[in-house]
Amino acid sequence: MIRDNLFEIPMWSLPCLNFKKKKEQLVKLLKLYPEKRIGIQNFATNRQTERPNLKEAFSNIIEEELTMLVNTLKTDVVIEDIWSVSYKKGDYHTPHNHGTIGFAGILYLEFPEGSQPTNYIQPWQNINNDTTMFNSLPVKEGDIVIVPKFVNHFSAPHKGKKQKRIISWDMSI
Image 1 (cartoon, rainbow, N blue to C red):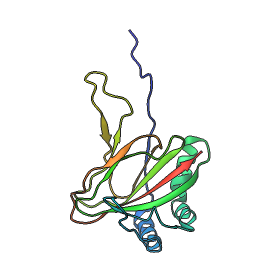
Image 2 (cartoon, rainbow, N blue to C red):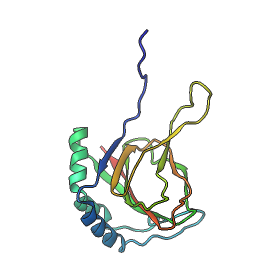
Image 3 (cartoon, one colour):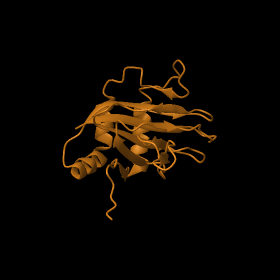
């Protein structure tokens, strides 16, 4: 009998090189794009505000990492949109995805003790018991995770005393 996977979902994980220096640059950059709590969101973000030049400035700072991704994919990627999200104790992000075509990236900019990693939801039920399956990756501050945009994901309530902060972006091929 042959057993193999009929489908699989690719993902990429890479470290942000020279993270200490890049973190300083990114934190300084994000001061130009303050985050706010808007509506029923259970976190602060700048996604609903104008962010002129953020894509270009971010791309320049993490150029090495984007080059690694392009070399692995063997195709160019273009950042379509980029924003940051901050979570105080108890903040969370409900299940969502970023569309159907392309990739979504997360850089864990501030990930103090008690931070919850992103949880990814399998797009089909468990074949043994018909339950929803999800998976989180072991991440630390400075890690970058890239997944297809269609993958539903969420952030469980933040348990840390210090703020958790991520930068997220969408890419097309």
